[in-house]
Amino acid sequence: MRFAFCVEDDTDEEIFRALLEKLWGEPIEVAQTFRFPRGGFGPALTTANAIARRTWFEHLDGALFAIDNDGHEPHRDDHVPSKNSSCRLCRLRFEANLGDLLARDRAPFMPAHYLFVVPVQFIETWLLCLTSHPFAGAPEAVGVTHTERRLLKAALYGVSNPDRETRRKATKPLLSKLDRAELARRSESFRRFASEIEEAKSARMRTLLTHGQ
Image (tube, rainbow, N blue to C red):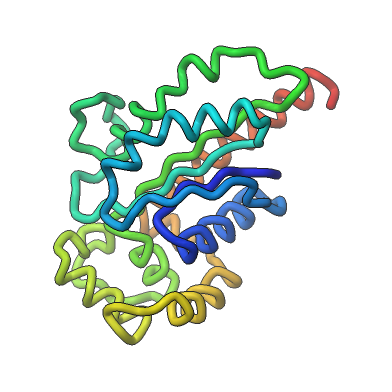
């Protein structure tokens, strides 16, 4: 499957590609790469629709948008995407403005799947859950402040400001033995991400059955 990846850096791309492959159960090709600058939630919002449209018209299988929460309000199931939402996930979905695209007939191509994920509080939260790290409280309630995030990075990587190679060496073995059930148990934002993928897989299967592809 061919996806566009819209993430903050190369290491995040590798992490999310590995997660998507594990959860979808198919090889994932990164067909398009987009980068949000670190702390660049504004640029993420202004480019989301253009990336979504490019994904659609270049006939990719989907796009994955991922950015850390960095202490903002976590997403809840009763949230509604809106321009003024204080939830990063809702804002990103609103600005992607998928209604027009998803209403189009894409035949003979498969539907495009748009996945939005905001790890709470950041991607290292998920990775630390895989190490059974003893969080001082609920995992997703830790890492709200910059100081807390630096301490969590140090716990995972050995240093609070790791370079790319250090991050890759630490994350690769964790992802290779991903315990999906355990991570879902400890992280609500991961459960939501996994649920989105299951919904996308179901939609794809319905299309296959309907059109006999």
